[in-house]
Length: 267
Image (cartoon, rainbow, N blue to C red; front, side, top):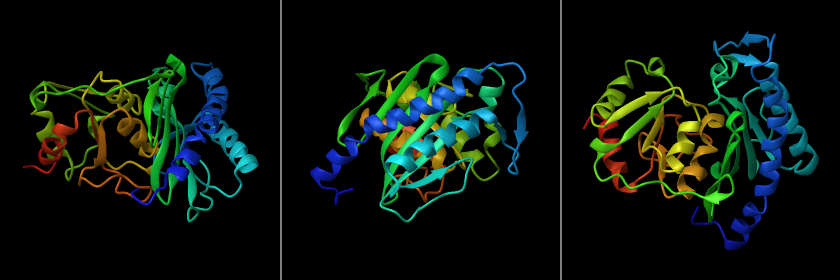
């Protein structure tokens, strides 16, 4: 990121309106199908669910990218990747939280990210069912529904509130770290998917983490959390990249980040 010039930052910031158009296009496919009768749910090879809404939303976003930025790559959840070796790659999750979507829970979202040489530089968390949107971009403050938002101060880890997607996602390898961190915070909650990271950015909670995620699950979250004053890394402490490990954690108060990583490492 240190190699990024002011001109390049400005060029990336100029792509924010286009990223919003992508989120709008996805919303146009997902929201009319949410809580609709007869929505068919299929099971993919990894046992995760997928619907026509997922596929239509990603297709709509890909169509816009191909038309306006054909030299950009695309990594999406539902279709094959294109041009991952290119300078700019869009990373798309049409419905993050498909299980929430198909069960009528409103806390699912669309994730739109832009990577530069593999690094997340722009991200949108769009939550159509509750009409909320976070936008993060390098060099500017994160916004929540058009207004700047900030993470909150956490005086001690013991006062913190922690969210993760689901307890059964943790394995024998990573569960001890999760349990160690859980024992040090005030409370933990589940099933918010990407919405939890928006809550960190808005200062409503303190920590969000997940194990074994994919780039389309986490890339958009990084600029949102960072632009609001928080820190988002892998459990190892490295900044997430498109080729990262997928074990990610967002901490609203940077002063508590080391303590969170230490707990996850069992220290």
